[in-house]
Image 1 (cartoon, helix red, strand yellow):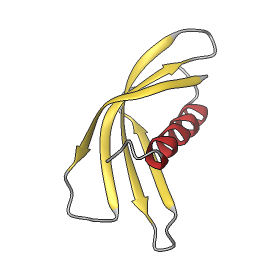
Image 2 (tube, helix red, strand yellow):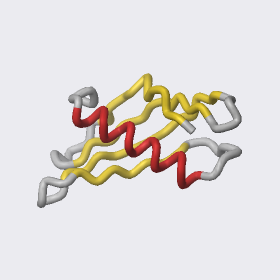
Image 3 (spheres, one colour):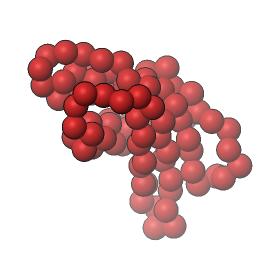
Image 4 (cartoon, one colour):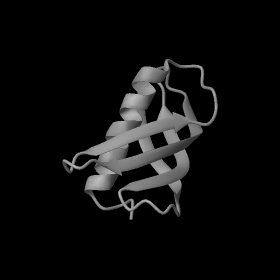
Length: 87
């Protein structure tokens, strides 16, 4: 399974400075070779220690185990955050 991209990102305007909420579409290629665009919602929260906590939710059901999908999406989001693409 591979996450190709997270596109059509929209940042929600919330009053908390340490939490950012986003919505977008995850471009996922499953191990069977099929590819699917899945709407996602995620938050990136900065803890008092400086660590970033990422929470991901899929807005649609998919016919694939959720744990590896969520883990792969979190890794992709972490890379986007480190590269400064989520601002």
